[in-house]
Length: 226
Image (cartoon, rainbow, N blue to C red; front, side, top):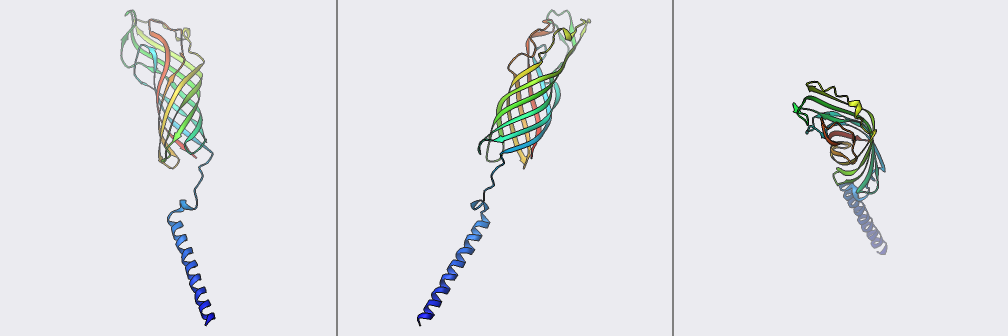
C-alpha cells in the first residue's frame, strides 16, 4: 500500500514539473526579450549621400539657391543606450547663387549673375541622442578644409570684377544640428542645419557685398548604417 502511494506521489510530482516546464517554455516563446536581449553594437559605420542648399550671408543675395553635393562616410560610437558620438568624413559643396538682377551698392552696376562655389573636405563631430524608435538627433561642430573656391560676378556695365582679389579662408568652422528619422532597419532620412562660426571671407568688395561672409546651409540626405 505504501509503495502504491509512493508511485502515485511520484507520478503527480513528475506531471507538475513537466507542466511547469511547458508553461515556462511557452511564456518565453511569446516574449523573447524575457530571456534574451540583443545588445546594440558599440560601433556602426555607414554611408551618407544628399544635397546641400546654401547661401552666403554677407553677399548681396538671400535664399538657399546654391545646390551642391553632401556625401561621404560616417561612424557612430555608442556611449550608452541613449547617447552616441558620431564622426563623418564628407565632400561638401557650398556657396551662393543669384536668382534676380540686383543693383550694386552705388547703383552704378546691375548685378546680372553672382555665383560663389566652394568645395570642402569636411569632418563633423556630434553628440547624438537616440529614442526608442532608433531615431537620432544631435549637435556639434564641423571643421572643413577648402579644396577650391571661386566667385564670378557678371554686371552691366562690365565691372571687370576679379574674385581672386578677395580670397576665401582655407578652412571653415561651423555649428551643426541634425536629425535622422529611421525608415527601416539601417536606413535613415536626415535634415541638417549648418552655420559658420567664423567668417569664410573678411576681405570683400563692398560694391558687391555687404559684410564679412558666412556659410549658411540646409542639408537633405539619406544615411545607411551597417
